Amino acid sequence: MVEAAAPEARLAPAELPFPAPEGARVAVRVVAAITHTIGGLRVDERARVLGADGSPVEGLYAAGVDAGGVATGGYASGLAQALVLGLAAADEVVRSAAGGAN
Image (tube, rainbow, N blue to C red; front, side, top):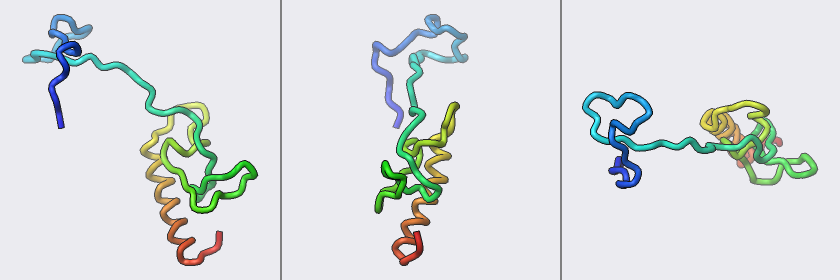
């Protein structure tokens, strides 16, 4: 849903630091923010969260930006991490429920 910006967030086209799009009547100031941090829970290749001793924590999985060790010095997409590790976690849950080996 799109809502009108609060009056204090509105800028006249002449106040913008760039040329306003043709026909523009108002604009909203956008401020950069942190989307995630580099870090998170330690996981294995099956998206299982690892405890302090390095062994998997029973029934605990992490994906997306909650999983650490993927972005180790640069930006990595949280969505890509969520898709890959989410699938790995789902596969592991099914394997575990079926009595598969850990």
